[in-house]
Length: 248
Ligand code: 6PG
Image 1 (spheres, rainbow, N blue to C red):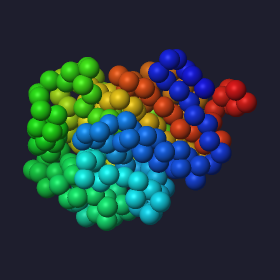
Image 2 (cartoon, rainbow, N blue to C red):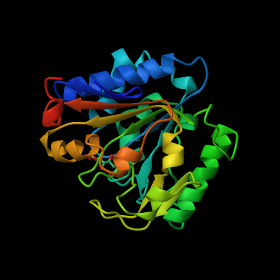
Image 3 (tube, rainbow, N blue to C red):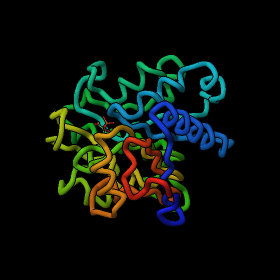
């Protein structure tokens, strides 16, 4: 269902169907390019089923791992092997088994503080991109995966925090989180996240319905300001789908 020309809600039955549809979109994005592909992953619990699926042979065998690079949209400022570490979760579930080590780009949480980690990651992104300024006709990422939190945050861009207004930096430190887990964060900013061919939100379960109703209703929340310069898709399961989107 189209919210506008490049903003769509795709309703699926349940979380298994959601992971399957997300995996198809990952594969389609990779297939759309003959060159190096950059995918920005997300943390939280929403993408876990997708990551598990990508590690299974039918999917794993369809991915040209040598030319796909994996980044992360935000990180909890904890050690790489801490169970809360977002990239650590993706590595344990699929990346370490499937991707060449040089193609995995974690946010360096061994830095002195989140701000220094953000600056190091910004440099890494700029060197991968080959420029210090983003060109709207050449997106940084082919695909950015996203989730939405109960307060309408996405990545670690929390409502009314300064990071959401950042217009120049590609990544910033966030000293204090607005929701659990209450650890400092590092987040990519809107200019960097939005610089993608496709942004794909995954939203599942009844607990997400209230916030999704507000976001899709157009409220000024971070999850609503994260918009690809290409297309933005919301993959939503039945339990999370707002009332006014049912039966459309
Ligand atoms: C994080 C995330 C965050 C997450 C949302 C949704 O580090 O927590 O990157 O933005 O995507 O909070 O989280 P769930 O998928 O766990 O609901």
